[in-house]
Image (tube, rainbow over all chains, first blue to last red; front, side, top):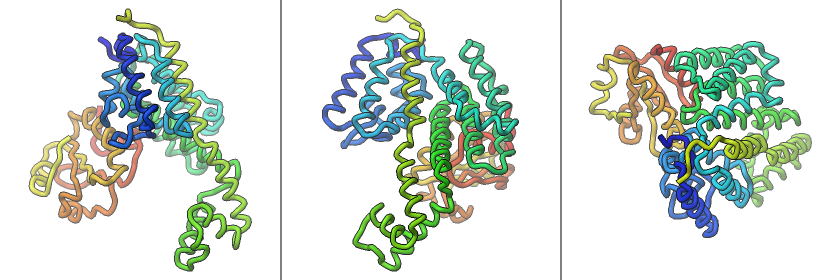
Length: 293
Length: 107
């Protein structure tokens, strides 16, 4: 069985994949995902020449959960040249024949053990208990003792119930969503994609909380922008320029906060990029399972 | 996952011996597309307990009107010929599992 064995143990499979990806990059047709069209292709489309993630997984031996998460990881790298560089390193740094079957669980455990995650979960005993229970199941997978469906389900339902005990605290709810999303076996296609989405959600909330930017302020900016459509104020400007002009004119405090929000948004993606870089390191350290051809 | 239409909805959904999860979607709906792999997995996981079907509301507007579909993706559980629960909008895989489990029951 070549399932989860990088490049099916065949160096020519790796070489062909790299050649396809590099030709798209060189031709300027590499795109952020999801994308597969005449105009360009994302990290999946470049290889399989279709919008077909399962095919990518079968062709190259990456676990389906990793392949499903790949576009969202690549999308965290800006600008496009950095995204292309990451997509290339994903293939380059995966050893031919590496057994990738444990990587998803390893990554999920690392996300659940991030200090910024733990600092929140410890504030809510039920969520912290669930975090530890999910980690314990993934550790069993890593140790070769895969828990059954009923065990996963029990832990997952407890994680959902634990999140529901959080009645206030945006950050606590966000971290609860991470624990819930991770309560699946690594064979579940969207588990890593979903956890990264929840991790990105927490990052957004944390960055905005740092500057005291709330949903109410966001809504206020939106309302001011919508009102300007009626009054025509600063109609000569577009996009953010118009928003900033509107705020500067009549809402200087809100303008100051909105500029801070823009700065914070430029930091978005750090958490996902860190996970992406860590995944590549785990590829390099994965045991070689088969003789290469 | 089976596509049902205005012609066969009653037979497939309302007269089904098993509970049915109905996914109201449309080809232009990006969140619906994002939800599709999750529903495929859910259909496999709950194959013994629930049937999962899709309704394209563009092709079957009468069904959308009949069930008061005002936003998609809309997931509706039908049990013994009657709607027993619905959820609208994006939903996490774990929350979807809990939603189905609480109304259908699983392993």
